[in-house]
Every structure is written in structure tokens, then in C-alpha cells.
Length: 301
Ligand code: PMP
Image (cartoon, rainbow, N blue to C red; front, side, top):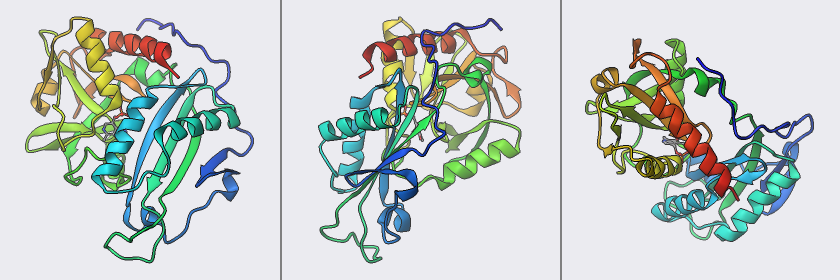
């Protein structure tokens, strides 16, 4: 495998020997003092949505896409927004500054708020909003260099995967099952077709060079990275088919990869113990990773 050179070489990812600053309901507080109520519906009902935005060079990647998806998730659940999306962007920038974050992630969660426990939505609760940062080397990724191994498992999640809720126990169990099987992640299968990865969108590249990824519906999360990568692939004259594909098609593919806001584009080299293509990261995935990173850095805010 050739050594890769990266466009972005941060010297420090926001080294955190000290406590982080966390945002909770209008206040920036040390993480030890960041708390929410035990009556919060995020805790009791997973009645909450979230977003994860990457930070490169101290700038936000694709913030507007994440803000739009958050608004949609809130709307689908008839949940109030805790602030405007402009205010939310300000808070993200403030979190980058207060945590000296150069490279890593900003996690944002909004819940319906705290109220006495009742399945029916309470009236007039104030949404809870929490943000925290995670310093992380995203661009120099040994995982992306090596590619990952996946297993296929049944998709046991609920039917509205297009809403980015914090109901993440099924994906968490899937990830644990993958690790127990000596793999890195699981691709979820429903009615014979791959939906997506536990926390990412899934793709194959056929032997004739076409990218195949599942079409948007309520079956999968509408990835912000997916939208950008498909646009960039089309601009690079790569043929795209948005349709469901089977595990047999993955085994027969020239390459496979996944996308997410934190991993960007990452090759998948094996499924259920079968090497995909040459069993090493493929040229299409590597090229798309490079193109995506260049574009992300250019358009970061
Ligand atoms: N699908 C699922 C189930 C996910 O959890 C994620 C990441 N949150 C994605 C896809 C990728 O979405 P994005 O590119 O917006 O991170």
C-alpha cells in the first residue's frame, strides 16, 4: 500500500488534559458540572434527536446540511427547536473556540425536555439542548488506509431511520456483534437488501465502475456526507445507481465503502469473511475520499 499524503496536517487536535467546556441550555460549563434532569424525555424515552458535525482546521464541515437535517428531524417529531439555526451555528463556533478544537467532532443533542413521565407528549416543555466536543484525528486515518471488515446482520431498528434519533441501542448491539466476530462494523440487512451500516451509509462499486447505494426513503438516514459524495462522484463522471443491493452483490463487487460525517469516505474490504474485489481499499473509494476532503476543507465554515 502506498503512503498517502494529506492536504491537512494539524499539529494539535485540541489536546484535552483539562476538562472540556460543555453547552447545556444556554450555559457554557465545565463538563463535571454539565447535567440534565432525570425526568428529561431524552433519558426516559429516547425522545431526542442529534447531529454530529466534524471540525477540520477549527472550521465546521457541512454545518448547513446538519442544521437542515436537524430542523427536519425536529419537525417530524413535532419537537420545538431550542434556538434558531443561526444561533446554533454561533454556539458551534463558540464551542470550537472555548475548547481549542482544531480537529474532531461536535456532538449536539436536542430532547423534548423534562416533564413528569407520561407516554403522551407533555405540553409546553422547554427543549433540552446539549453540545460537547471530542478532539480526534480525522484526516490521518489508519482505518481509511487499511479499509474495514464488516459482517451482515438483520436490521432490527425502527421504521423511521430517516429521523436522526438517539435510539441507538440496535446499532450499538450490531457494532458489538461485529467486534465479537473479529470485524469492525455491521451492514444491516432487511428483506434481503442492505439498508446501511450501524452509523454510516453503505456503497458498492460494481465491476463496470458504477457506484450503487440505497435510494433515500424512511429506511435509511439521509447522510449529509452521502449527498456531498454523490454530487462529487457525478461531477467526476462516475455512474451512480441509487437502489437497494444484496450481500451477494457486495461479495461480487469491485469495491465497497461507507460514508459518514466523522469518517468521510472509508473503504470496506471484506464482508462475512469474503474479500471484496482485491480485498484492499479500491481506487474509487480512495479517490472519493481525497475529493471529498479537498471539497470539505474548501467549503468549511
Ligand atoms: N446512517 C446512519 C444510521 C448514521 O448513524 C449515520 C451517521 N450519523 C449516517 C448514515 C451517515 O450520515 P452523515 O453522513 O450525515 O454523518
